[in-house]
Length: 494
Image (cartoon, rainbow, N blue to C red; front, top):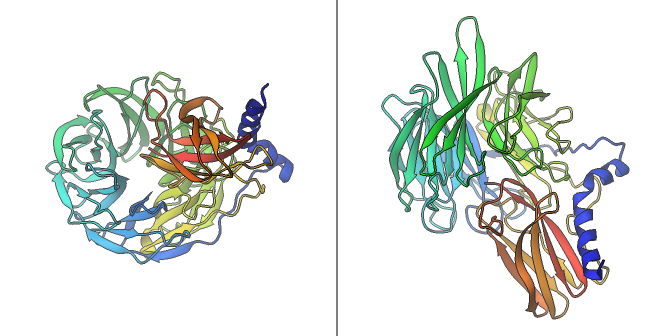
């Protein structure tokens, strides 16, 4: 093996083997603890929180949907994982769910809400500095009570569209983006029946084409019986949807997560709720063709709204779940063993009636943190993950000469793209590549290119060499120059 190939192999091996190192470093139990949360005031009864870099400074900010106030609160990151005072913006009445996504033609992320009391979807366009103008609102349908909302490019034109589910109309509605952030009604799709009501939805590329499909969580309720289901809808390539199978998953299910939980490159579905005899996370693993294996239930200790992130530094996605309802005051987290099975649940106290949550690396220390909308206290609780308990640095120089050093990408996690800065000790020829967590090469960003001494930057748009957007998950960036190599973990969220 050539010397440079040895550098590459060593760097990738060190980045991909933290589970073994975790076992060596401790008692074999890979656990991670969260610090006591910091609390930030928002407006009345926050229901959901989303995370994204709203002002372009490379740090992850927060947007919070306040149900009783009819507002969204924006909290900008101070550059250290703490947040400044909330600035609030009016949207429709009763905002229930919030998304951060680019809706117009500029590069700045915007905000989308579903508004349950006004039957609308609102779009707040970013002025470029994390402030927002007046919301534009769009009717979902007469008598609709919108709950879950997503913003995804559903018809492949490069602009994020909106899909929103309504429990009263027992359907979800697609609003296509005109390219400037304005929305036009495209169609509605039945997702319920006379006693079955949908409540949440998520998008994911479940089959082999490039278009996002949709999964809807719905519930059957009667005096004697309760049951929850997920129903799949396949994208026809134009932003229209074909009804697919329905899968029974338990009771009282909430928001679905659509991520690659078992590391095979396919998008799976995880839903928290009540299954069998306790609150569990129900996992539906993708067979690779858009069909799913039988549901598997994992004890979670909570059944509320959920988020996911790499909490234990082992390159797979763990899950945090709010304990919603009367007397609830915490979130639990369960750690992925790498194959979409999970360890026992641990809990973190956050306050009265936690609801929606978001996971991201708010303080840029390489580990994921959790923000929770605490509705009963009208605050957002931000629980920071501790330092890596193994002492392993994500930055792995594969040669003691350190001719090259790769910085942590910003933002991280990222959606549409991320900046990769690296330092060169002396003029060198540089190769910069991105790999998936199995070590497969996805993209070469710099290929033996000459660069002078000093700091340089490359950009990855979250796509592979064929131009396809990669699934959410943990990726590895490796830079090689001057006989050295350096690697970092990157976290992509659609």
